[in-house]
Image (cartoon, rainbow, N blue to C red; front, side, top):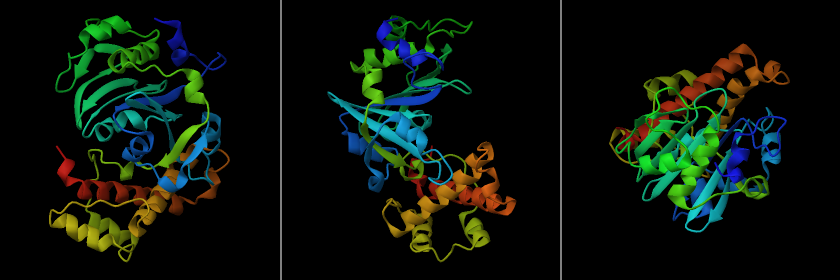
Length: 299
C-alpha cells in the first residue's frame, strides 16, 4: 500500500490523523458548490473552514450541525465530512446525472465503499469483508480491488489498512488522490441537512397528517400546499431558503439536539424529557415528509 495513503488508517496519538470517523466522496463533472448542494448544503452557511473549526461547531448551541467541505481536482470534486458518515449514505443523490464514489471510516460501526451511477448503486461492500458485495454490477471493480489490496474472494475478513485500501481504490477509479494536507487545510464548506438532498427516502411510514396534527404545526407556511401537491402525485422540492425550508431546518436542528445532547455531558440537562420527546417527534415528521415528497425516488 502506498505510504501516501497511510494517514487514512492512523489512530489517536498518531500523526497525521484525520479522525476515527470521516467520509469522503468523489463526484465527476460537478463543481464544489453544486456537489455540496447535492447532499443538502445550506448556501447561507458557506465559509472556509478546517476540520478543527468544524469539530468546534459540534455542540448544543450550534445545533450539532453536519458540515461538508469541497475540493476541486480535475474533472472530479472531492467532498470530505470530518467526524461524520453521511456522504456514504448520500452517494445516490451525488451521482444523479453523473457518477460518484464514497467511502466511510467508522471505527464503531460499518465502514463501506460505494460506487453509484445516475442514482443507482453499482457496487458496494463492507471494507473488512470485500467478498460480500452488492449492487447492479457488484463485480465491476474486481481487478482494481485486487490492485488496491483487497482480496474479493477472502471470506475470513480483512482488517489492516482497510481505509487506505479504500482510498487507493477510489484513486484507481477516479485518478484523484487527495492528500491529508489538502483535506485538513481551509476549504469551502457548508452546513448540510440531508433532508434537502435528493436521496432515496427510507423509513417514515407514519402518516404525515397525523404527526402534523399531533405537533400542531399545520399552519406552517407552505406545508399544507406541499402535502396536497405530493398527494396529487406532483413533485415537491423544498429549498433551504424558502419559508417552509427554514422551518424544516429548525425542526431538524431540534431533533439533532434531542439526540446528540444525550451523549453530551455539558448539554444533557438543557432539554427536559418532554422537550426531548418533542424533538424526536419533529425528527419523525421530517422523515415522513421526505418519504412523501420523494415518492418518485422510492424503489
